[in-house]
Image (cartoon, rainbow over all chains, first blue to last red; front, side):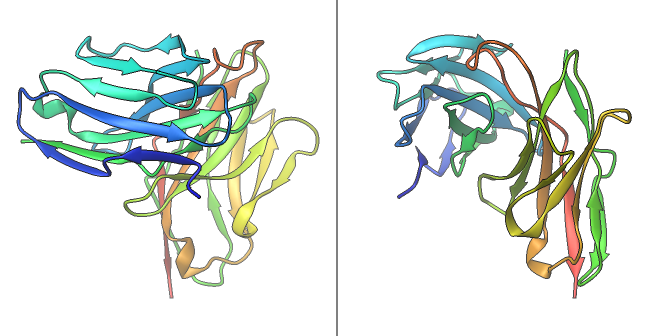
Length: 111
Length: 117
């Protein structure tokens, strides 16, 4: 069973559209994250939720809105997509301070 | 602020030879240090971590890393490289704090390891 699963894995969409990426973890972890990996493979945190509460909100455009219906889910909604939003988005989760477990990634291409 | 530097964009090594992937970090206090590996079109897989204790940490797939506080380094090593080790490797640091949710990983830029037969 996949510990951190995210869908879709690949998403191609036009500029201006609104899209969502879903994430679920079955590890019972309290904390979930969204990371963005750009075209140069650089990884940067976007958001962190602990028990459905937003903890970290890095400098991310307001067009990006995370939603956590319960502690096992953290979805990422993106409004008015722009070309520069093309990237790989990784969902992750952790229970302790030590190890973060990542999903397989969602490849977003905006055309 | 915390930061991680991986000075090499790519490391080339012949199969069977030892490999080293370099990582240096900057953090205000004592660090938690991590290595992750990313295979093509895949997510990040946890390899190993340093929390406390022995400076030499052993991880998955025969990898190990040595924490050197004086040099603020956490280089990844393997005695004998395999072609299947070819992947993108990320070093990451997390500052110690009181709140798990308030901590976050800061990643280095990644180093591509190419192991040739």
